[in-house]
Image (cartoon, rainbow, N blue to C red; front, side):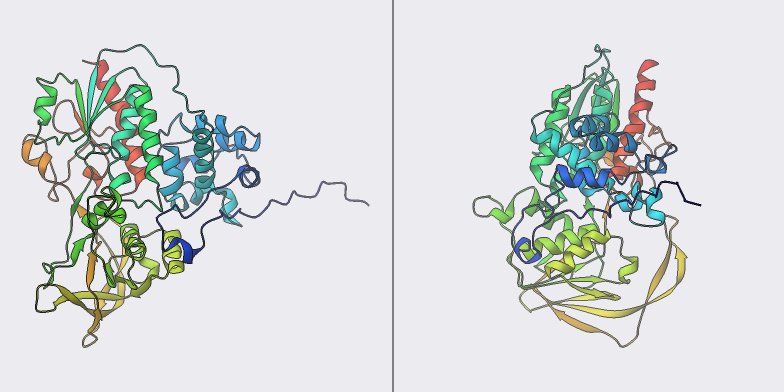
Length: 475
């Protein structure tokens, strides 16, 4: 008897994104991946199963209609796809580049159970870039103004998201940014080769087109306080999204030597101040031969890859755990390895050695081994590193970059004493709403959670926008 059933359609493999050759890109600050063209995007989009109950949406902190926008890519309508994404995500070109999709939406993709998941982030980037490159970015029809005014403190991913959501509801929104460029960590923290600043500016310009006002060089806590915003400035609500930008250090001998930087200062000089263009840019940056970067996260990878591009001969990542425990995205570790970064896993710095003239010339480390898993401060089970006695050694360096995380800037805490903060200096906010202990003040992103991802900060901004809108209805 002949089997008349149709054979199962074979789906194409996950499509690789073309990118610069490692030897070439390690010498320039141009973006590493080139992105999908229409043909590659259509092939990748065709892999989507269009699940009736899509788990991928559950994995997205801003709940993008993922099957919906991918279907539009398949149908040859990338502009429609971009506009579908923007229904819940104001910054798709950014998210498509820097969000850890592999641990969120793509981790829930049904295809991922037996093969590679759909490249959701790459398709998001494609749709957003296509719309922008075609000059088709348009503001949606806006509702009538409500007469309510909201101040947003900080123009990072959480602040920009809450601003975009609230202005689309008819509220007047003003964002106050301390630096001379809007974008927060997107402009000062993430290098050009991973997130071109023209992309960030384009997203900021889109929000301005919607009606968001942005006040630059405006340090809240110095120029005016939260109370001033709610009082004489006439705002009905305030959203605090100042991030976590104060650097952490190791607390070991020699950390005050010349040539020792926090990752925050090092990256800000290069990214925001364009030090890599010196003297065309006013900001100089140290010229290094041998650089050690302490840490295993994305910021450590960004610092190491930046040091390479600035001309260093040797760049080392020194991390006290193994590669499996490193919090950086696997893609970032892979790119760093390809470019020539040297990894010193299971090693922990114990001292920075000086040359007798006040500059660092060596990083003394001790070898580590991993113990049993223990729960950390964020509730994660992690294997804790244990020093191996007598295993110390020295790496010859002229520059050390400390990339072990950051703390909350104390300025808002110091100038708003009636708003509750926790023992680490972060603002205490209620669950989904982001409401603080101070009437009319909401908060979200890293200033509440500590250092986290761009998309989680955006998720907090989106949820807080809904809560702020409800609050304004009651005023």
